[in-house]
Length: 230
Length: 354
Ligand code: SF4
Ligand code: SF4
Image (cartoon, rainbow over all chains, first blue to last red; front, side, top):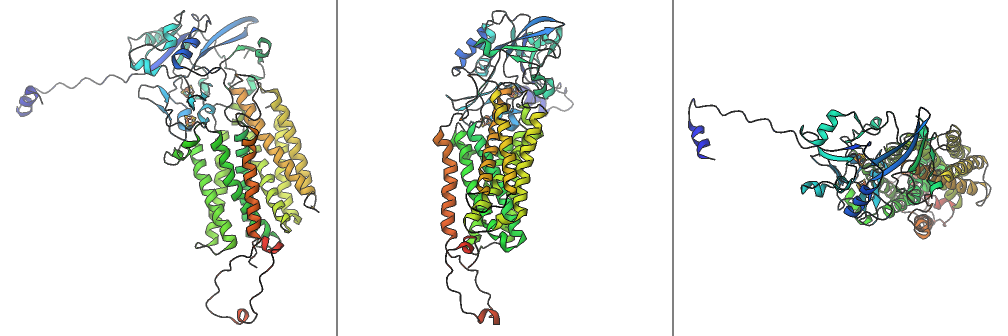
């Protein structure tokens, strides 16, 4: 106890201590992806693979490439995809080993020591953001580079993005870049119907664009041209 | 929604493959075998006595061997035991671990009870078995239906087909094992009718589901639709064969069982892989049928089940320990001398206290 506190404690009718200011809202990491700036160069995909040493053929993030018809005119959509660090993530309650958890700052992470590699979280992610990593023998997905954020660095994908399409920050800090982007633009999330409350926001995503895996009925209208390209 | 052409996509390999399909078939068939055995015991009919015993034995064998598929499919099988202390109330898989443990315990107690007196009342063991079998069926339903990332599985048709197609497998196996040990339960139309209804219901549901267009239109794996269509056909054929009164061990009942097992496994493989290829996609080509397992790994658990049934057959051929005699000597029990040890014939093979 400091001398000032000690004297105040024993003073009668002394000046009341001012009420402590309310604690700042907890940090909430979110990502905003401005699709108008993405050029589909996949630099983020490569930077993530290098940073996180993902196995060959599996990615924590990549830029999906779609074409759609809007009022009879073709339109190309480049959609960087990653774990949405959902506010209501279905992957967390599904895990039988309690290896998937949500941190106080909103990051949804996997503890590889606990993970038994059952794959049930992969099947419970509406965004296909997870995969089983056969090298680490555990479930794997984007951690928003939690190790870099904790060290005061930006995630590898954000740092490398040549179009500055990806922005990461604290949504609860009104002065942060993400808070300003969210205030100034109409940002949407993928598949809000899934109820997961994703925290990766997209600027410039066409209204009502469903992801291919959104619902099987919609999938029938889709042509997959991967074979043609292989 | 306008037509969407997918040029490249964020896609991953399926995670639940052959061993998951085999696990689901074996554990669900085991649950139905347990329910069939308990129902047969409850009737108290002499003809159903063998079904009562072999239903329990098949259920326990399947309950012991099926989870090995699950463990083999995990990336960290050595951590399997941690699922017990870290029970997660919200995870169907945690409930599954509890249900399987209960199932194996109830089955083992029931099997011991076939040969010797139990320290607990038989009705309590039967109640435990009923609870465990229903828990296994319920947990597998939720495990599939509540996987938020696979829209095809959210369709109740998927879980219904999985559940119904396991009925002819479990009941059929118990009926065939009983017949192989001289029992006559397979001659009863009622038992065969239940198995036939399960197979016809599963095959019919699969076919209707397909015709309505849920899976033929599912992208990702065209062979999945063919596999499901073949499975529907196998289940429908099995249903028809179950209706035929079996005359020999290698006759209609055996073929009905084999077709039901093939249809049940095909339906599971099709539903699991088709659902995942639509949702997760193909990172490196079509899903491979065997998944990451090799053929010996896949055959290991059915082989273990066969070995366990072989051991059960030898044990059931021996005379059972009698229940301790009542203290008061009644005229009836005093009069006839003790019967000579019965030969290892059809009746003792049913667990009949000789
Ligand atoms: S995107 Fe998928 S993996 Fe990421 S938090 Fe949401 S549900 Fe979980
Ligand atoms: S794979 Fe790991 S993180 Fe995912 S549900 Fe299983 S134990 Fe949990």
